[in-house]
Image 1 (cartoon, rainbow, N blue to C red):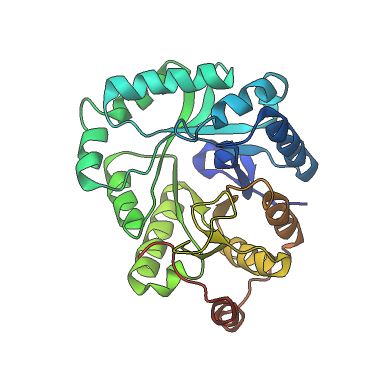
Image 2 (cartoon, helix red, strand yellow):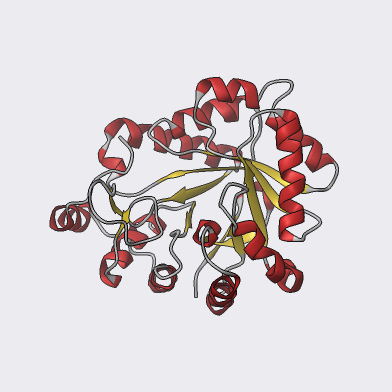
Length: 286
């Protein structure tokens, strides 16, 4: 059984392993339906998608008709201005065939100039607040990639009481001391303010570089079940964080199985360093 945790101040008890629907970016409906049944088998009750994930929102639509009440449903807008974000939020609801989503997130808001626009008087945040006031969304979050994500998230939280943040978190990323410092500073701020912390890229092996891209992920992933167990258990061993799953439907069951086996014991630095050296693991963002 995958443990649950209150998703920040929302009060929803979300499974600590959240389904990242980027996995539906390029799959057909039959594959999506089969994968969504796997979510039910593992008791997953939280789905995270984005308007920019290809056909992912469309793939969720038919299934949401039957199962909407089972899930905390989150999506994202990558637009920065009010009008475009407003229209994209409404389009996301239409694509997923739902009257509302639980969480709308400002997607990958890590560029300082874009942050000024999005959080400004005619920015995407205005559209998110308007949608919340109209009952189209319930909560508002912010996401980010790259080494700047934690520091930018802290700046965003100083300007608006976001309900959640999302950013990379895996052992190779924390070999960057500056990122490690900023991540834990953000985590402390979020815990003080009861903001949910979602993490991504748990099973990253390394950037793809010149190797053939033979998985539907933005990075070369770990594939061996025991190694996935180690990486997943390291993330889940950090109290108070959620793990958003891999963007490949074939690897997804392995992540769920790893999460179900987590017994609270976090692999230590010796175990993680051995894995890094054995597999040549490297940070995805530098």
